Every structure is written in structure tokens, then in C-alpha cells.
Amino acid sequence: MLYSVTWFAQTARRPRAAWRRCGAARGRRAAPSRARAAWSAGRRPPRPHAPHAPHAPHPPATPALTPAAITLTSFFKQETDKLRDEDLYKFLAEIKPSSAPRKLKCIPGTLKIEVSPCPDEIKNGLTPELAKLNPYTDENVRPCKEVLSFVPPSPTQPHLQYRALLFLSVRDINFTAYTSRTGSARNIAVRVQLLAGEQQAAALPAIFGRSSCPEFTTEAYTTVLYHNKNPSLYDEIKLKLPADLGDHHHLLFTFVHVSCQRKPVAPEQEKNVETPIGYTWLPLCRDGKLTCGEFGLPVMQEEPPPNYSFIFPRVQLPGTKWVDNHRPIFSVALDAYSTVHPLDGHIERFAMACEAVQLGNIPPRIGVNNMEAELRAR
Image (cartoon, rainbow, N blue to C red; front, side):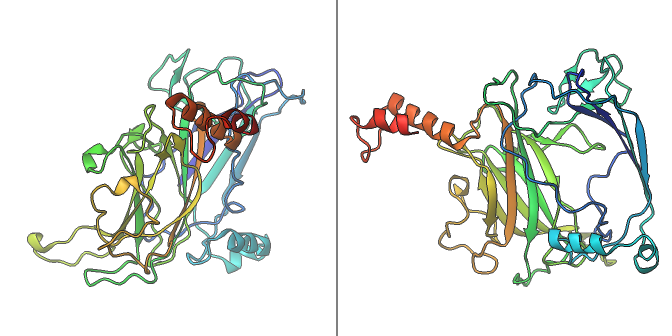
């Protein structure tokens, strides 16, 4: 297995923040029998909820960057039930160069990282939205993908381009209390879809594909941890938000059990590799407000009823069956980078108050006479 990444880093004279050139492609989904390798110090820090202005002031002058190359060949197997951040920190702290190869199982692989100064002209460049940048001269050459900067911009810098991206991080799943006569829940995968309705035909091709897949797809799968009912995952899924985002748009999570062994039976009796075991969802917009933050969601054992997408799953609908008595057993986090939806709470509340004045929907608790003071307070 060989995976290479080339980074073009910016100096004070370069207009672009960072670029990367991707090498060998990754597969669509890890096989159930593959264990996760601990080769980083846990999950990266959370991003600030603000996009980086494309023409922000240049950073202070830095010395000329010398090209450098790093090759990593040591990857160690980690127990699938110890993949939380605190477990990984402890695991990495205990690794010693002299003892690690003998005590730990080494996974063969090579990771090569090259860092070099950004050239004066980027050819075959792609923005974080995968839009082509001039000059784009050759379709058969590996493109240079611009890395989205997570540095908060100056408050005085306006947005100069359209951006509406959403990053979904899948954290934890707990199916230890799952009971069913139809099957087990041990090799768990989560299928993620962005829907504009409640039918499968309403799934939008708004999920960025991996390097070996099409640019956009209608669904994405998380990693499978073999025989683990309570996995901790590090999957991050990048989505492109619709320009007309409304109350009917939502994320649908379908939990499936992936069968590893297929018994020799007649074709008409053969079961599917993926068996649905649960469903949950998350509305993306309510009253014009984009949904962001961390969420603990309960999981329904049956397909959601009609009109489910207009309410949050924390509402226990009558006549429905939930895993673990409607407890939040699935945790996710949503980080948005948008120049359309306000990501600052004060600006968002001010915009909603202005909209209430324009539509004449002033809350009775405020009243028309007190609306000006309310706007000033926000």
C-alpha cells in the first residue's frame, strides 16, 4: 500500500494558502476485517465556524521554505474498542522506538509526504468545491486541490466568493442494547444521504466522492469495525449545501449490518450483504437557520414514518420502536463553511429579527414599540 501527498506551502509572497497533489487513490470503504491504524495524535482540533477570505492580508514575512520529504513506514494495529481520543493519546505516549516493533503488530504500508514552495502559477488547480481554475490545460494530469483554510478571517474582510460547504464528522455508535429476531448488529456501517424529500429518489448528488470515486455521489459509507457494537469512528464526510436550502432538506442516516460470511445457499434464499438495522435523521435548516454543532441522536429500528423530516428525532413519535428506549446512541458533529448562512450567533439573531419586521411577524412578547430596542440589543 502506497499513499503519497504533496503539499505546496505558501510563503509571504504567494496568494494561495495551501495546495495538495493526491497520489494513490483510496477505496470507497474499508473492509470489515481491516483494523484501524493509530498513526496520528487523535482527532484534529475543531474548526472555527468561519470561512477564510480568499484575499485576506498576507501573513508576516517568513524565511524561504526549503523543500522537504518525509516517508513513514511504521503503522501499528490498535484495538477496535480503544479508538477514542483519550485511548489514542495514551497509546501514542506509551510507544517507544526500541520496543514498539516487538510488542505491537505492524501493518505494512508507506506514507510519503512532500512539502515544497508554491509555484508562481498553479496549473490544473481545483478549488475546495472542485471548480476548475485557469489555466487548466490537461484533463489527464493529476489536479492540484486547494486546501480550505480554517483560519478565521478579519471581521472587516468581506466574502468575495460563493461557498456553502458542510463537514459531517461521525463520532460514536452504541448498538449494545440492540435486539432483533431478524439478525445481529456487529459489523456496523452508516450510510449517509442528503435528501430534499422523503423518498430515495430525492437523494441529492451533493456528497464529495473519494479520490477513486466520481466527484459527487448520492451516498457515503463509514468505516466498518469488525465485530464491534460500540465503535468510535473518525469518518468525515464533505457535502455541498444546496443554494435553496429549506426545511425539507435533511440528512438521513441508515445503519446496516455488513455480513462477512456468506453461506452456500440457493440464489433465491441468498441474503443481502447489507441488512438495515436502524434509521435516524437530522434536519439541516429550520426557519432559515443552518443546523451546526454536535448532536446525540436516537435511532429508530423501523423506517421513519411520513413527514418525519420536519421534526427532530428527539421527539418520540407514537407507534414507533427505538433502539435502547430512545436514548441518544449516535453522535455526530456538523461544521459549516458558508458565505451564505451567517455562522455568528449575533448576526444570525439580528437577521432573523429584521426578517420578522419585514414579514410583520413580530413576537407578541416584544411588540412593535419595543422592536427598535430589540434590534439594537442584538
